[in-house]
Image 1 (spheres, rainbow over the protein chains, first blue to last red):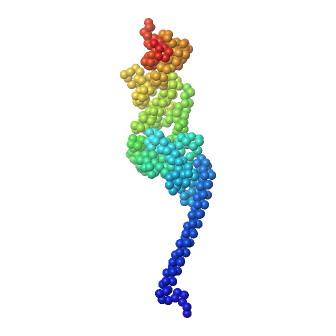
Image 2: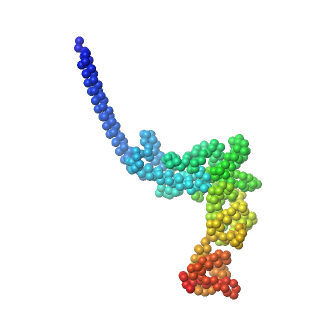
Image 3: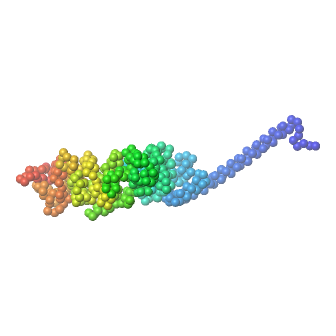
Length: 254
Length: 193
């Protein structure tokens, strides 16, 4: 009976031979796959670039469209900002790199110029509003989402910019390297609900804190961090002591 | 608590929204906060003074009602007023920055406000003399600060007037002259004399 594999030393040769053929075939196949993939990527890239170029004005000018575009990019796993290298095709196609750096500079501008007043803590909506004013009408609208994204992009600079969540959907941006402890977060959250005002009683009542604890956190914010302003004419007798968080106040004429 | 808002006073002055913020009326213990507040107060005081042509601000203006400064130093809508010590501090800063001068000197409770700097008053003065055809004539100080036809210079306090004349004299555009009933001044075109 003829045996396919044969016997003896020749069998080894044949086996090696077929292994080589398989290897060659495999290489060929993977190359074909890689080629196809390359072709697909090229098509995809062309399509995305043409989409981006086509809608460039919309992406830069319309916050809603920009958000959808960024969502789409995230869904397919690309970051329109990351780009393979600086000045890469993403930036070319979108000019979004410049856009984002420009926004970053404006955020820093607002944070720094209001820092004397608010101790480096600003409410998100207020920041968005002031950045919007800085950009003027031609600059196009900016959303909270854009600001968060820009602040993330600022992170490598080590400037300590951070978005802080105060609960019930309120966010603040901290622009100084200063940790906010849990008690300060509570004060911010309460102040945000009161148009900026807090006092010891309120903290004692709402949180069950001791007077000492309430006083300690408020006085620290007032005297150490500068994130609070004092009002010494509070209450019906005009002698009370209240604390105001400028970051949680809105300044309509600025 | 009402949100902050601007407010137009009975005298027609638009108060900025910071004026409706309670802590604005308290001197801040934190230095950078107070320096920001001082800048805001300074701007507010000078623009209000210009609006109503007020030249003098006294620390005691915080303590009585019915004065010229009530609209600024008080906010009845939120029941706050600026305290004397706070105003004295702000006035001190204004004097340091050359935006006011203690008048009389050697005290810290009353200032002359420079909503126009003495250099600017000098130009206004010279322009007025030129436009009213009073160059080369001797004028009494009274004729300048209380002219028959009201001018920009009406009611200008004497120390400011002297200051402005001294500035013009330096460039040869004015000369003070002693006359029978006090001081007089003669203005010259450009660098005359």
